[in-house]
Length: 277
Image 1 (cartoon, one colour):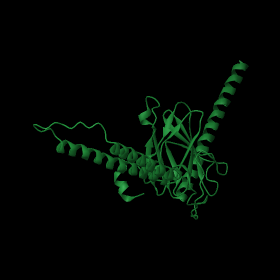
Image 2 (cartoon, one colour):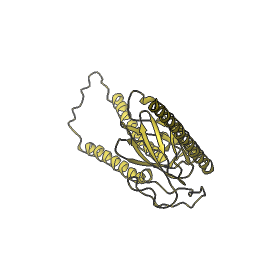
Image 3 (tube, one colour):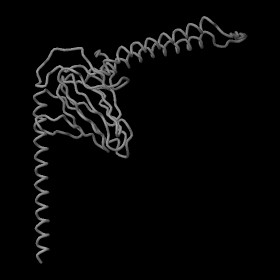
Image 4 (cartoon, one colour):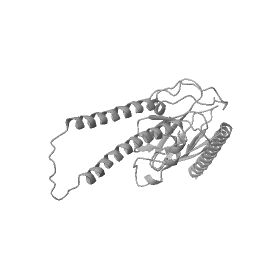
């Protein structure tokens, strides 16, 4: 991303800097904004000049002009050229926004050579190389992240998603109850989370850091507090987090199972005592 655009991110341009697709979106916004400013300054400049040059004066009768064919053709062609230019640039940028690229690291966190092979977000994830596919589930009023199983480990998290830097992360986005919208501005565009339907998007964190966002679709009385957070860390730190989360979940489930068994044993003893009386 152009360094100058970082200064405007979050002010007049979308936040960016965390993932290439977010950068492409911001650059597209910047291009359209620049063209709009040129048109705005040109139109307003002409209006001000006309007001000064042709202002009313004593004894002067305003000329009655009923049309100017060359001028009308000129601004029609000019507007058409601008629209065609914006369309062409948008379609040039669109693949980089829509299609997930290959990861910079493999499944063990080792750097790999870059590749230009991509896959559409409405198709399976990148066909070659490492990737991390996470199911994002919107619930009133929290985000749940289901990670792929590794070695029989079941890992999920709420609110904060932890990902390795440099790995392409593909997201399967859905919802349990009402429509939500997943949006981490610095990592890319927003995507609706709709019950019974899966939308797909992606990002690849370019550097370590914490990227914040929140639900972008009015989903109920506590919508404003439905925050989201992505923490990008080096691969080794991500693997330690994954293993620790898996161990914590297993320990919690084992404790719950033991407590259920204890309650069932107590109920069984109580029933036996009641039957013997």
